[in-house]
Amino acid sequence: MAEHLASIFGTEKDRVNCPFYFKIGACRHGDRCSRLHNRPTISPTLLLSNMYQRPDMITPGVDAQGQPIDPRKIQEHFEDFYEDIFEELGKFGEIESLNVCDNLADHMIGNVYVQFKEEDQAAAALQALQGRFYSGRPIIADFSPVTDFREATCRQFEENNCNRGGYCNFMHVKLIGRDLRKKLFGRYRGYRGSRSRSRSLSPRQHRRDREHHDRRDRDRDRDSRDRSRHKHDSRDRDDRKRRHSTPRKSRSPVRDGSEERRARIEQWNRERDENL
Image (spheres, rainbow, N blue to C red):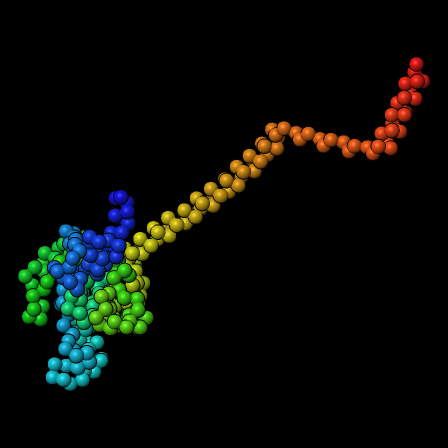
Protein backbone atom coordinates (compact mmCIF):
# COMPACT_ATOMS: atom_id res chain seq x y z
CA MET A 1 0.00 0.00 0.00
CA ALA A 2 2.79 2.42 0.94
CA GLU A 3 4.63 1.68 -2.32
CA HIS A 4 1.45 2.35 -4.31
CA LEU A 5 0.86 5.70 -2.58
CA ALA A 6 4.48 6.68 -3.18
CA SER A 7 4.23 5.76 -6.87
CA ILE A 8 1.17 7.97 -7.49
CA PHE A 9 2.24 10.91 -5.28
CA GLY A 10 1.86 14.17 -7.17
CA THR A 11 0.17 12.55 -10.19
CA GLU A 12 -3.39 12.80 -11.46
CA LYS A 13 -4.15 9.49 -9.72
CA ASP A 14 -3.30 11.06 -6.37
CA ARG A 15 -6.66 12.14 -4.93
CA VAL A 16 -5.08 13.76 -1.87
CA ASN A 17 -2.15 15.90 -3.08
CA CYS A 18 -2.45 18.53 -5.82
CA PRO A 19 -0.43 17.47 -8.90
CA PHE A 20 -0.19 21.01 -10.29
CA TYR A 21 1.22 22.43 -7.08
CA PHE A 22 3.68 19.54 -6.92
CA LYS A 23 4.84 20.10 -10.53
CA ILE A 24 4.80 23.90 -10.89
CA GLY A 25 4.52 25.21 -7.33
CA ALA A 26 1.29 27.04 -8.16
CA CYS A 27 -2.37 26.09 -8.56
CA ARG A 28 -5.19 28.04 -10.19
CA HIS A 29 -7.53 27.13 -7.32
CA GLY A 30 -5.17 28.53 -4.69
CA ASP A 31 -6.32 27.93 -1.12
CA ARG A 32 -9.69 26.74 -2.44
CA CYS A 33 -8.11 23.66 -4.03
CA SER A 34 -9.73 20.40 -2.90
CA ARG A 35 -6.31 18.73 -2.70
CA LEU A 36 -3.39 19.41 -0.41
CA HIS A 37 -0.57 21.82 -1.23
CA ASN A 38 2.43 20.39 0.57
CA ARG A 39 4.62 23.44 1.06
CA PRO A 40 8.29 22.45 1.53
CA THR A 41 10.11 23.66 4.61
CA ILE A 42 13.40 23.65 2.69
CA SER A 43 14.19 23.53 -1.03
CA PRO A 44 16.91 24.70 -3.45
CA THR A 45 14.17 26.54 -5.40
CA LEU A 46 12.43 29.80 -4.52
CA LEU A 47 9.23 31.14 -6.06
CA LEU A 48 8.85 34.91 -6.29
CA SER A 49 5.14 35.20 -7.05
CA ASN A 50 3.90 37.66 -9.73
CA MET A 51 7.17 39.58 -9.53
CA TYR A 52 7.78 40.40 -13.19
CA GLN A 53 5.49 43.14 -14.49
CA ARG A 54 5.65 43.14 -18.27
CA PRO A 55 5.01 46.49 -20.00
CA ASP A 56 2.08 45.00 -21.94
CA MET A 57 0.31 43.52 -18.90
CA ILE A 58 -3.21 44.49 -19.97
CA THR A 59 -3.05 43.58 -23.66
CA PRO A 60 -0.08 41.71 -25.16
CA GLY A 61 1.91 43.97 -27.47
CA VAL A 62 0.11 47.14 -26.34
CA ASP A 63 1.02 49.54 -23.54
CA ALA A 64 -1.33 50.98 -20.91
CA GLN A 65 -2.17 53.92 -23.21
CA GLY A 66 -3.21 51.58 -26.00
CA GLN A 67 -0.13 52.20 -28.11
CA PRO A 68 1.69 49.27 -29.77
CA ILE A 69 5.07 48.43 -28.25
CA ASP A 70 8.08 47.42 -30.28
CA PRO A 71 8.81 43.73 -29.44
CA ARG A 72 12.48 44.64 -29.09
CA LYS A 73 11.58 47.10 -26.34
CA ILE A 74 9.59 44.40 -24.55
CA GLN A 75 12.55 42.01 -24.75
CA GLU A 76 14.95 44.72 -23.58
CA HIS A 77 12.70 45.50 -20.61
CA PHE A 78 12.59 41.79 -19.70
CA GLU A 79 16.34 41.26 -19.98
CA ASP A 80 17.01 44.30 -17.77
CA PHE A 81 14.72 42.74 -15.13
CA TYR A 82 16.32 39.31 -15.54
CA GLU A 83 19.85 40.62 -15.11
CA ASP A 84 18.80 42.73 -12.11
CA ILE A 85 17.27 39.72 -10.33
CA PHE A 86 20.16 37.41 -11.23
CA GLU A 87 22.80 39.81 -9.89
CA GLU A 88 20.90 40.38 -6.64
CA LEU A 89 20.12 36.72 -5.92
CA GLY A 90 23.53 35.58 -7.12
CA LYS A 91 24.98 37.18 -3.98
CA PHE A 92 23.66 34.23 -1.98
CA GLY A 93 25.16 31.40 -4.03
CA GLU A 94 25.42 29.74 -7.41
CA ILE A 95 22.23 29.93 -9.44
CA GLU A 96 21.52 26.81 -11.48
CA SER A 97 18.45 28.18 -13.25
CA LEU A 98 16.34 31.32 -13.28
CA ASN A 99 12.99 31.03 -15.05
CA VAL A 100 10.34 33.70 -15.55
CA CYS A 101 6.82 32.72 -16.58
CA ASP A 102 5.24 34.33 -19.63
CA ASN A 103 1.80 32.99 -18.68
CA LEU A 104 -1.23 35.27 -18.25
CA ALA A 105 -3.27 33.35 -15.63
CA ASP A 106 -3.40 35.03 -12.22
CA HIS A 107 -1.59 32.24 -10.37
CA MET A 108 1.35 32.21 -12.81
CA ILE A 109 1.73 35.63 -14.40
CA GLY A 110 5.18 37.07 -13.73
CA ASN A 111 6.25 34.17 -11.48
CA VAL A 112 10.01 33.95 -11.03
CA TYR A 113 11.64 30.62 -10.13
CA VAL A 114 15.25 30.65 -8.98
CA GLN A 115 17.04 27.38 -8.29
CA PHE A 116 20.26 27.49 -6.29
CA LYS A 117 22.92 24.84 -6.21
CA GLU A 118 22.43 24.30 -2.47
CA GLU A 119 19.41 24.47 -0.19
CA ASP A 120 21.15 26.66 2.41
CA GLN A 121 21.83 29.25 -0.31
CA ALA A 122 18.11 29.36 -1.12
CA ALA A 123 17.32 29.67 2.60
CA ALA A 124 19.72 32.62 2.95
CA ALA A 125 18.16 34.34 -0.09
CA LEU A 126 14.66 33.78 1.27
CA GLN A 127 15.61 35.31 4.60
CA ALA A 128 17.13 38.35 2.90
CA LEU A 129 14.04 38.92 0.72
CA GLN A 130 11.63 39.19 3.64
CA GLY A 131 10.13 42.70 3.74
CA ARG A 132 11.90 43.73 0.50
CA PHE A 133 10.26 45.64 -2.37
CA TYR A 134 10.94 45.69 -6.09
CA SER A 135 9.70 48.47 -8.34
CA GLY A 136 7.43 49.68 -5.54
CA ARG A 137 5.80 46.29 -4.98
CA PRO A 138 6.42 43.86 -2.08
CA ILE A 139 8.34 40.69 -2.93
CA ILE A 140 6.35 37.55 -2.08
CA ALA A 141 8.88 34.72 -1.80
CA ASP A 142 8.63 31.15 -0.58
CA PHE A 143 10.23 27.76 -1.04
CA SER A 144 8.96 25.88 -4.09
CA PRO A 145 8.60 22.10 -4.56
CA VAL A 146 9.80 22.43 -8.17
CA THR A 147 13.25 20.94 -8.69
CA ASP A 148 12.91 19.58 -12.24
CA PHE A 149 11.70 22.25 -14.65
CA ARG A 150 11.37 19.71 -17.46
CA GLU A 151 8.23 18.45 -15.69
CA ALA A 152 6.91 21.96 -15.08
CA THR A 153 7.22 23.51 -18.55
CA CYS A 154 4.78 23.20 -21.44
CA ARG A 155 6.23 21.03 -24.20
CA GLN A 156 3.77 22.37 -26.78
CA PHE A 157 4.88 25.94 -26.01
CA GLU A 158 8.50 24.93 -26.63
CA GLU A 159 7.39 23.61 -30.01
CA ASN A 160 5.40 26.82 -30.65
CA ASN A 161 2.04 25.04 -30.88
CA CYS A 162 0.37 25.36 -27.45
CA ASN A 163 -3.33 25.95 -28.15
CA ARG A 164 -4.03 27.16 -24.59
CA GLY A 165 -1.98 30.29 -25.06
CA GLY A 166 -1.02 32.34 -22.02
CA TYR A 167 -3.65 30.61 -19.87
CA CYS A 168 -1.93 27.24 -20.03
CA ASN A 169 -1.44 25.63 -16.61
CA PHE A 170 2.18 24.71 -17.37
CA MET A 171 5.08 27.15 -17.51
CA HIS A 172 5.63 29.23 -20.62
CA VAL A 173 9.18 30.31 -19.85
CA LYS A 174 10.31 33.63 -21.31
CA LEU A 175 13.76 33.42 -22.91
CA ILE A 176 16.74 35.71 -22.70
CA GLY A 177 19.33 36.24 -25.42
CA ARG A 178 22.36 34.02 -25.82
CA ASP A 179 24.81 36.81 -25.01
CA LEU A 180 23.11 37.67 -21.71
CA ARG A 181 22.89 34.00 -20.74
CA LYS A 182 26.58 33.56 -21.40
CA LYS A 183 27.37 36.72 -19.43
CA LEU A 184 25.37 35.60 -16.37
CA PHE A 185 25.82 31.83 -16.28
CA GLY A 186 29.27 31.82 -17.89
CA ARG A 187 30.84 32.81 -14.56
CA TYR A 188 30.05 29.34 -13.21
CA ARG A 189 32.21 26.31 -13.73
CA GLY A 190 30.75 23.72 -16.06
CA TYR A 191 28.71 26.21 -18.12
CA ARG A 192 28.08 24.70 -21.58
CA GLY A 193 26.75 27.57 -23.60
CA SER A 194 23.18 28.57 -24.39
CA ARG A 195 20.31 26.40 -23.24
CA SER A 196 17.03 25.95 -25.07
CA ARG A 197 14.11 27.14 -22.98
CA SER A 198 13.94 25.85 -19.45
CA ARG A 199 14.05 22.16 -20.24
CA SER A 200 17.82 22.20 -20.66
CA LEU A 201 19.49 20.44 -17.81
CA SER A 202 21.02 22.22 -14.89
CA PRO A 203 24.31 20.81 -13.54
CA ARG A 204 22.37 19.03 -10.80
CA GLN A 205 20.03 17.51 -13.39
CA HIS A 206 23.07 16.53 -15.50
CA ARG A 207 24.34 14.61 -12.48
CA ARG A 208 20.95 12.96 -12.01
CA ASP A 209 20.86 11.93 -15.68
CA ARG A 210 24.40 10.57 -15.54
CA GLU A 211 23.46 8.52 -12.48
CA HIS A 212 20.34 7.30 -14.28
CA HIS A 213 22.36 6.28 -17.37
CA ASP A 214 24.96 4.59 -15.16
CA ARG A 215 22.24 2.59 -13.40
CA ARG A 216 20.70 1.66 -16.73
CA ASP A 217 24.08 0.50 -18.08
CA ARG A 218 24.73 -1.53 -14.93
CA ASP A 219 21.27 -3.12 -15.20
CA ARG A 220 21.89 -3.92 -18.87
CA ASP A 221 25.26 -5.52 -18.07
CA ARG A 222 23.72 -7.52 -15.23
CA ASP A 223 20.91 -8.73 -17.49
CA SER A 224 23.46 -9.71 -20.13
CA ARG A 225 25.49 -11.66 -17.56
CA ASP A 226 22.33 -13.33 -16.24
CA ARG A 227 21.28 -14.39 -19.74
CA SER A 228 24.78 -15.74 -20.45
CA ARG A 229 24.83 -17.60 -17.13
CA HIS A 230 21.35 -18.99 -17.76
CA LYS A 231 22.38 -20.21 -21.22
CA HIS A 232 25.53 -21.83 -19.80
CA ASP A 233 23.55 -23.49 -16.99
CA SER A 234 21.02 -24.81 -19.49
CA ARG A 235 23.80 -26.38 -21.54
CA ASP A 236 25.26 -27.97 -18.41
CA ARG A 237 21.88 -29.40 -17.43
CA ASP A 238 21.40 -30.83 -20.91
CA ASP A 239 24.85 -32.43 -20.80
CA ARG A 240 24.20 -33.96 -17.38
CA LYS A 241 20.84 -35.24 -18.52
CA ARG A 242 22.41 -36.94 -21.53
CA ARG A 243 25.12 -38.52 -19.37
CA HIS A 244 22.83 -39.82 -16.62
CA SER A 245 19.71 -40.66 -18.55
CA THR A 246 18.75 -44.37 -18.95
CA PRO A 247 19.64 -45.68 -22.38
CA ARG A 248 16.67 -46.28 -24.57
CA LYS A 249 15.60 -49.83 -25.19
CA SER A 250 16.32 -50.99 -28.67
CA ARG A 251 13.36 -51.46 -30.86
CA SER A 252 11.89 -54.99 -31.24
CA PRO A 253 13.23 -56.79 -34.29
CA VAL A 254 11.03 -56.81 -37.32
CA ARG A 255 9.02 -60.03 -37.43
CA ASP A 256 9.61 -62.41 -40.40
CA GLY A 257 6.89 -63.36 -42.81
CA SER A 258 5.06 -66.73 -42.60
CA GLU A 259 7.12 -68.37 -45.41
CA GLU A 260 10.37 -67.32 -43.80
CA ARG A 261 9.20 -68.72 -40.46
CA ARG A 262 8.27 -72.07 -42.02
CA ALA A 263 11.66 -72.31 -43.77
CA ARG A 264 13.45 -71.57 -40.51
CA ILE A 265 11.39 -74.23 -38.63
CA GLU A 266 12.14 -76.83 -41.26
CA GLN A 267 15.86 -76.01 -40.96
CA TRP A 268 15.66 -76.43 -37.18
CA ASN A 269 13.95 -79.80 -37.62
CA ARG A 270 16.61 -81.06 -40.01
CA GLU A 271 19.38 -79.95 -37.69
CA ARG A 272 17.64 -81.74 -34.80
CA ASP A 273 17.22 -84.99 -36.81
CA GLU A 274 20.86 -84.95 -37.82
CA ASN A 275 21.91 -84.64 -34.19
CA LEU A 276 19.79 -87.64 -33.06
